[in-house]
Length: 295
Image 1 (cartoon, rainbow, N blue to C red):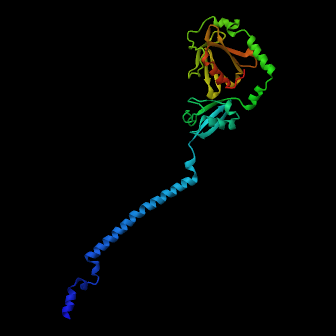
Image 2 (image 1 turned 90 degrees about the horizontal axis):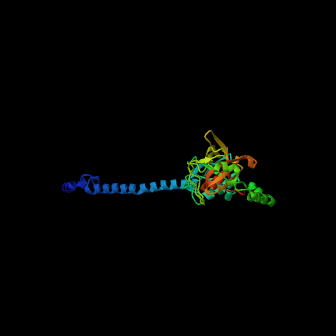
Image 3 (image 1 turned 180 degrees about the vertical axis):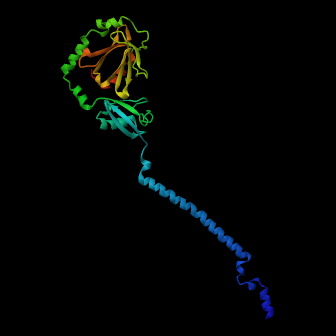
């Protein structure tokens, strides 16, 4: 019995009933458990990140922030009224005109927007150079004004047309000859016959008034003003105060015009300007009177 006990005692298992926790197999078991736990950690971590990302996306969709286009804030000036407009930055000028028709009451087809950059109907606000705080000049006529002009009696229109036809050309009338006979001013801006160009970025200069004095025209659409400058002073005229504009080519110098700005209710209130470059005449009328001109 002693021998058997001794023989069993020689066995490491018999010496320590808990020896399974100390032999090589037990260490391997522990490593396997550790590796299993590490694998679980690496597999579970991405699942938690994906869950967070999904929650953020869901919140963005629920708030609708991802669907709102970029907006730009600017001011539209019509006559003496100012409108603060907030509109989609990538919308077209045509879409903006549709919006302004509802805001200002001016038909879309009767609107003209004076913008420093491009202003074609298919151009976006962004590409037109409109930025936050920009001021845009709106020129046009409300529907009531358009209908009033269209409904004018035919006799009145015919009478006006006949009176203009029968008048002696401006450039040969005595009142104008005394200025024109002095010839083209040496500092007059070059005139071009048969061409229509937009207003230049600089004032129109080198012209004369009925006294033979120098005249300079500066257009301020953002203020709805036309600055009429002479050597003595500068008169700031509201564009709405100019009732009409008359112009005719100068005989033998058709690249220049005589232009009359009617500042009062009658033709006697016209302010005459001589040697106006012909290529700018239509742009002057559009800037001051707008695109709806019937007379």
